[in-house]
Image (cartoon, rainbow, N blue to C red; front, side, top):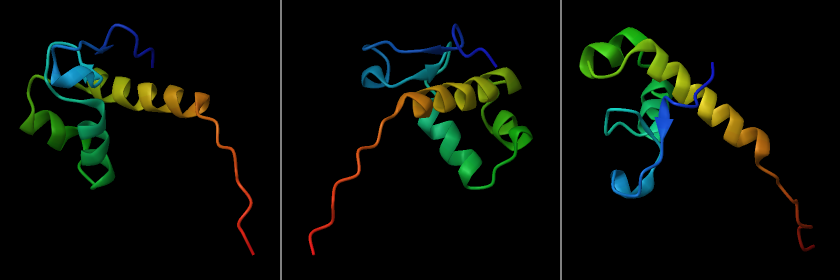
Length: 78
């Protein structure tokens, strides 16, 4: 899913958090609903401004961000 164009970052909306275009629904909020076990149908039913493409865009955005994340392990002191 190409999330570009569906996920926007605007400092005037939710302090610049990534949101689904045309809504005030943040990517992290939608991902949290999915993590809690909500189905796509339940999310769309409760947030009619959102569609399946918006949900998939949230997942795609998160996947791309995580791909670029770098973790540098530090030694644990003995």
